Image (cartoon, rainbow, N blue to C red; front, side, top):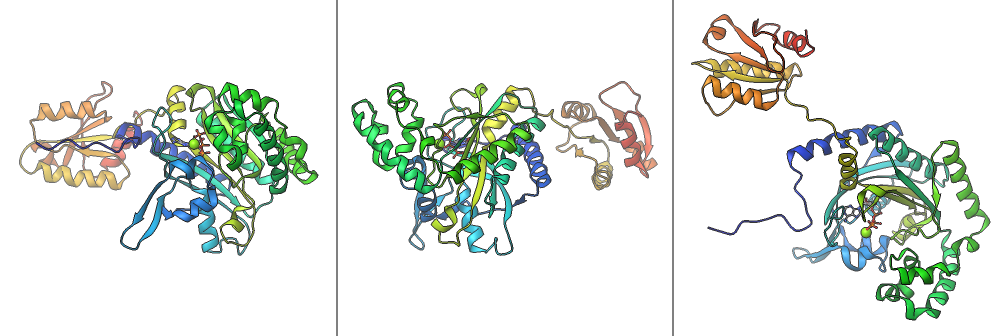
Length: 424
Ligand code: ATP
Ligand code: MG
């Protein structure tokens, strides 16, 4: 016997039970985006490796160690499974001149790939949905993106997701800050861990969100970004906070929040739950006004967020907010010569009328079929025996209550079943 194959580590099968929840969530999310005027964009799972190197930045966790990169031997080019979708969305916006007639609000949903250590809430294939508001200076759309997240949590019945907010200024402001930060960390280098030391010259801002207590002590006495922020940055940040206050969205300022990717400027934010253990961030976002130019496009501002589907689903489950499974309306049982063909046709008629009808397949006597009907969870059994066949009718037996079985003519059957499903 040959060895049993398993899924790639960190990549999950979503089995029907869970897939139904995901499908439901996707529907909620699609309708929610539509209400805010965001239109969907779908980009390939594979992109040229250079896109992510340029967009996300060399000195980031993703580019340094998390990308699934391989050479397409057929045309000798380096390709990467997308680790996130902002770079792809901006690439597509440039490639198709999407902003030629004005700014655009876009959204996406789909799998992302990162070679991380798999653990609860952290996988190698995971799903995100996210928004990108392209061509807007803000802070109006920055606030809109945050307010719409708050509305989604509310619609989903999720409580206790808190919002952390920061501004990381302009490129120039960050450069000045970065210099002083490196000076400070270099003076305390002996108390930095290997990770922080490695980042000292490549990505010193990331040291600010180190979880190591020893490093955090050095961080505590580091200069704060706030002193480096100019008038325009502060006005943008103030404007954002004002809109959030007006909308009744609570937030905590977190001056250590810098986010992992290079392309951010000004607004950065995260939505965090305390109910998910170590992987508590369900959504993160920020502004990326330099990204268009960085990818060779005409300069244009952008801002967006990405939410982790698996973490949201875990939170939904934890809060008892996943929808109940919706079984079929009808289970079709048939017994006797000619009844399979009849049941087949009746099934199609019912489906055409919008009912969910499962046809019994695989044979078995009447009793065994009725058992299956019951186990299926369907509300009604539609039974075709030789008597029914002769009368061009079916027998209908409610399975979830003790209303009596009755014969119903085939003509007008769907309407009758609908009435029965409504409890009449
Ligand atoms: P983390 O700090 O948890 O690694 P991140 O900053 O790398 O998160 P982003 O790139 O901002 O994450 O992605 C946005 C969201 O996508 C995260 O807040 C999280 O909910 C989800 N996410 C990111 N990486 C993973 C992963 N490996 N598995 C599952 N969900 C993930
Ligand atoms: Mg990460």
